[in-house]
Image 1 (cartoon, rainbow, N blue to C red):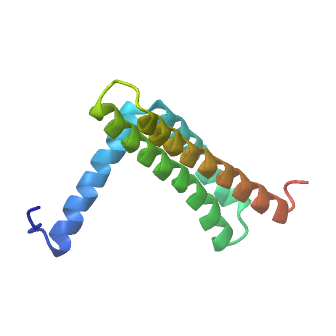
Image 2 (image 1 turned 135 degrees about the vertical axis):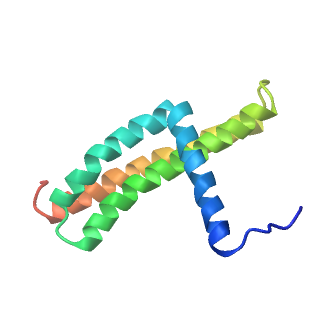
Length: 125
């Protein structure tokens, strides 16, 4: 593998550029990402109202970002598996299922964090 000649700010620029391309691709190609982004656009302002501290705000926003991050990783896994070939293979199915499970666990984590903050702040139960 050829060593990268990008260093310092140039490396940061290209890393950011490629990350933005990935986010745009996820938005364009993945309906689940668009749904989760729409939910996040509702939850981020709600978190400002719900949170009573910076830590609570970070937990609420962070849990939403983790869902999006895991959705992108899941989509990347699916793209690589689909690129390999259309025929079914047990390992390919397992990889897709595990990626999906990661997103599912992040959705549960988000619900737990929101529930905990709402409970602590007397807005639930």
